[in-house]
Length: 171
Image (tube, rainbow, N blue to C red):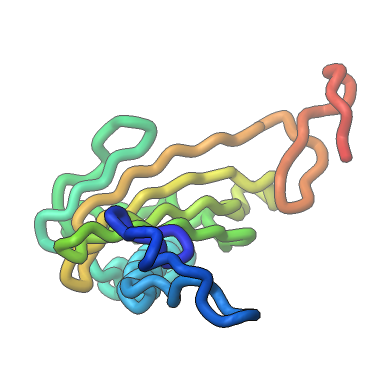
């Protein structure tokens, strides 16, 4: 719930409160949001960056999709892919932003938007990733990744910009 406002709150529930304070207390599910982020970060940092699939909190029937295609139908497949040779080029994550929403049954959708740092034949421009995690009972049940890379980028600073010769300006 945004700023502690829940569906169905009445105007009395959202009254002005005391001067200098929020009209509504912090979200009741703030601790659950933090837990969802912590669970999802096991995938990002232990899995992607450290390549340690065993340290990732995955449900046995977890499913992962990348760009709309299945890349793992269970925890064992996902863990194996995290430790595979192709993913060894992942060297870090930067500029991570989290957006979390939990339903009344405490199932959370945690969305991370971040720059994935890659070192394949030398450092490469980061890849912009949006990755959604469905977290339930302290485990990841679903992962959906969408990414965008600009292979012809010449300048990066948290985000990449096309070659200025293409008619685009860079900040």
